[in-house]
Figure 1 (cartoon, rainbow, N blue to C red):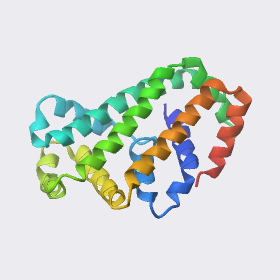
Figure 2 (cartoon, rainbow, N blue to C red):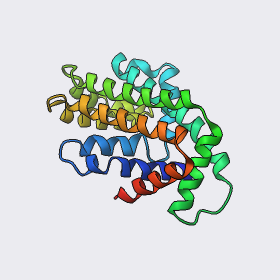
Figure 3 (tube, one colour):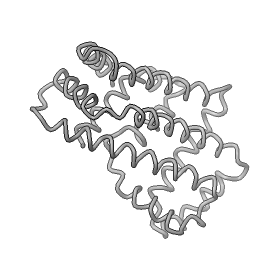
Figure 4 (tube, rainbow, N blue to C red):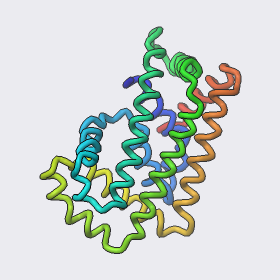
Length: 218
């Protein structure tokens, strides 16, 4: 699982190297890489989703809970897909980038799940739109700040950190004309193209493209 997630994190860093280096979208791309595409351990945050569903939702505004639910849905779907990939990935030794690309393409095609890949991208887009909507709620940033101590006391610190980081990231981008819309459109276009490539192109073409993408990563 860690190898699959690490590969995907490097792939994201390569696909969006231009955004990670830009003044306009650096923070947003970095947020997506760190919070949605990395090999970071989300165990604590996952447990906190369950606690919200179990009755602690009253601590957060309902709009914030909706964002947390979308994030939980994304993580469950991603974990299922990554686990399936990992079972195929087990074969062979990890020796170089080329072999990782070959292994990744083989695992991707072995498990299939094209509708789930599309849904994964849809939920990522939903989270981005929901975070942008939160930034337009008067007084929410102050409310989030006031929630820090009670959230930590309730064992929801990781989720609180995600919400504050997401709010600040998208608040900054929302100040640009169509900043959020442009950013999410870039994500949708590039991820959709990659999904189509991995399902439809010849394996050697997929491996070549992935090798190139990884070479762009910082």
